[in-house]
Image (tube, rainbow, N blue to C red; front, side, top):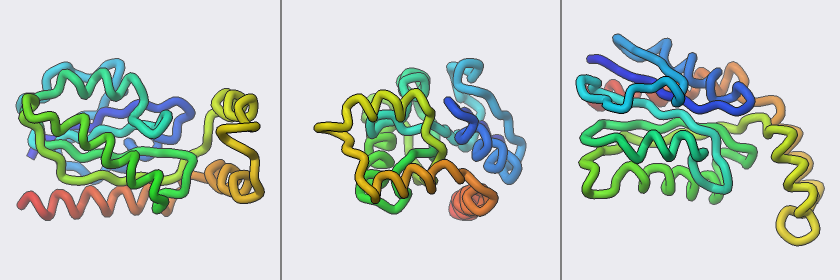
Amino acid sequence: MKTLVVYSSLTGNTKKVAQAVSSVLPECDMFPVEEAPSSVEGYDLVALGYWVDKGMPDGRSRAWLEGIRNARLAFFGTLGAWPDSDHAKECMKKGEALALEPARGNSVCGSWLCQGRIDPKVLEVMARMAGNVHPMTPERKARIEEAARHPDDGDCRRAQEFFRNILDSLK
């Protein structure tokens, strides 16, 4: 089985998870999204890693994904929110929906997210909007502080396990 990992990383979070994922995939090529091949023909599984931006995969990941056809995909990503939150689940659905537009002929094996450190520039923008969109509540502050400690080794192990399970399901 030949595999491909493509990732977009703003702070290094998603790159760290991509390295962990690629270490458990057979015959794996890995590229940052800017250097990724535009065709995935010949790959049995393509793993796309992205950071969540406004509830969606980041723009570079979306742009690359728009060109992908007839691929078996699995997603992984990082976000500042709790990974088991309704918001995170909605983010995964949106990422999968991009790939599953009927004309593209793709299939999706699953999605996995973990928390990741939020870029300080993003936090600055959010603070300027704090009055009406993103108020700094004690819960929000605690979540941002926790996100700053991720992805950690446990997150990387969980990502590896997620992809091992995908490989098992494809046998």
